[in-house]
Structure formats: structure tokens, C-alpha cells
Image (tube, rainbow, N blue to C red; front, side, top):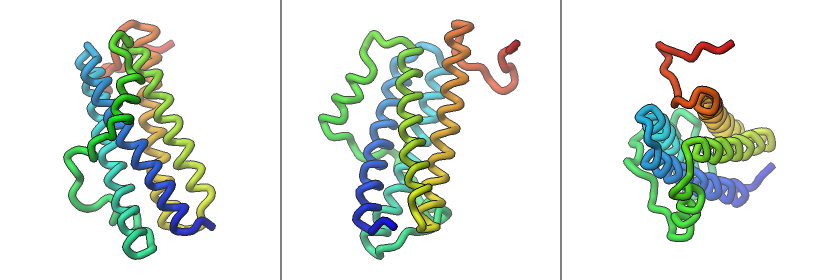
Length: 176
């Protein structure tokens, strides 16, 4: 079983990834020409703030009390408007991730990779812990990353095959 220090290290790493993910999606939103694409990236950026908030609450609880709070408590409370600012080297990393000439498909491919890595991190941590509160948080976050991945994959497939951005739930694409 992991000790408190190991949990804190994982949470710090995960918080950094969520901050990077938020900034990545904001940048992708700013660069995407299609309104539907911008809305999707904005929605996922907002989710990243929620995930960061959960991780921050768990981190603070572990540091103060040595215990995890349950998922419902971690989700409750005031969400920060924006995640903490990125360090200059992290901002440079985001700038490199989405080059100025990147296409929407390039942005979607990068987003898929981010979500895949997030899912793998949370899924692995959920499998490796015996702490029920930690497991619940990690499982929730892995499911969230998986939902993002599926949403991005649908948008990518549709954009690649039809040349149009995402569809809405009322008018889904006609798939053979």
C-alpha cells in the first residue's frame, strides 16, 4: 500500500497534468475556427478545472490530516474560476504542443493523447491502491478521461471522414 508521501507525489503530478490539459484546451479553443469545435474544447477545459479542484481538495486533506476525503466531499464546494497559472516552462510546453499552423485534426490527435495518458494514470492508481476513498477518486477521474477520449475520438473520426466538425445530439452523423 502506498504511503502518504507517494499519494502526494501522484496528486502533484496529476494536478500538473490537469493544469496543462486546461491550458491546452483553451489554446485549442482559441485556434479552432469552427464554433462547434471551440465549444467542445471549452467544455473539456471546464472539466479539467473540476478535476483539478478534486485533486487539490484531496491533496490538501492528505497534507493536513493524512486522510483522503470521500469523492462527494472532494466534488463539493466552490470550484476555482481558473486553475493556478502555469509555470513559464509549462506554458512553453503548451505552446509547442499546438503549433501556430496546427490543424484541427492535429489538435484532436494531441487531445486524444492527453486523455489517454490521463486515463492510464488514474486507472493504474485505482488498481494499485487499497484505500477506498483514493480508489473512488481515481476511478471517477479515469471514467472522466475515458468520456473525454470517446468524445474527442468521435469528433476526430467525423472531421477526418466528413471534413466537418463534431455533430450535435439532435442531428448525429449518418454512419454506415
